[in-house]
Picture 1 (cartoon, rainbow, N blue to C red):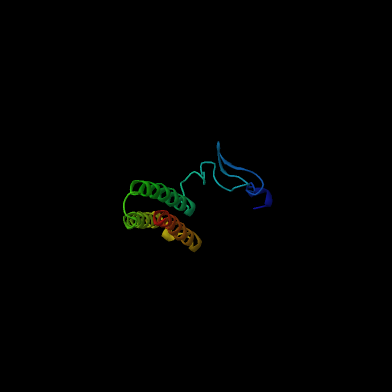
Picture 2: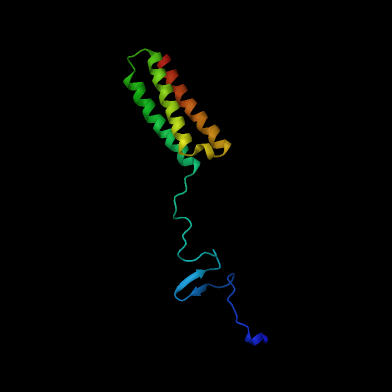
Length: 123
């Protein structure tokens, strides 16, 4: 078998590789044209962090307003329960698999907002 008898194949680093009318590889991504890697939902820690931030912010605001005429320990107890519940909810959503920085930031944010409620009702 001589060199002329060998089939030639396109170089995927330089040109598209086609299978009929379908592109199965291209030089810039080396992915088939039906593969869209960014179309799948991939939860990320900032989504869990932001969800906890907004949920806690809204719920603690409601608690502070609804219980503003109650004794401060009552408001603080409800705020602690809500903050703890949001923390558990956030961890179960996936924060337990996130990096330590995200975990620390989430705990700090939950404690800071709870602290603001405590400061609000103690004055």
